[in-house]
Picture 1 (cartoon, one colour):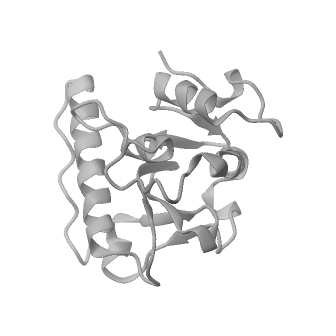
Picture 2: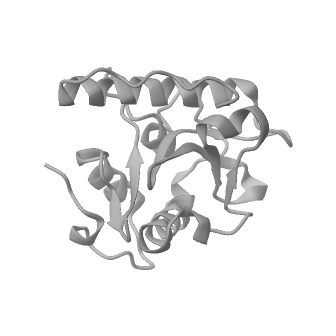
Picture 3: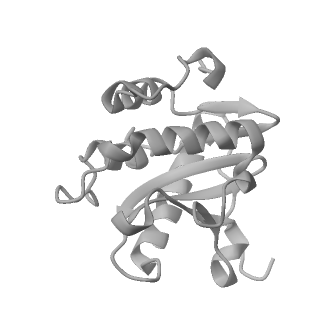
Length: 177
């Protein structure tokens, strides 16, 4: 079963972070859909959802000193904005699409509050924003380990989807294409 964003209760100023995460866990495959854009939380082959795990503080990258739950309203509003207008409607301070070597797979980084350092890694795929993992950023550049982890989560997600659909997983893109 796929839950459309329109079927979920509208966001209000008293968003309960735990309830929002529970709704997203029930169906992470299609979180939002409008004007052709979807937001998807990547689920690995073993059934974990690293981006949601980060939000709940149970992911290996979660830092108890910098809890995420207080930023849930902001993430929900970003998802609502992507649902309505696409990811490029977010400002450059909210969504960064990487350049250089990371541009070949359309990797991006969703910033929640810059001074707190919460980031959600993702990929743009055929009018879909796939959110893979979260981390607390402490340096000016995005750590290579986080980019690698995001690619691993995406690959695992695509393999799981291919198995569900009875097909073969997509082949990785080569640099320069």
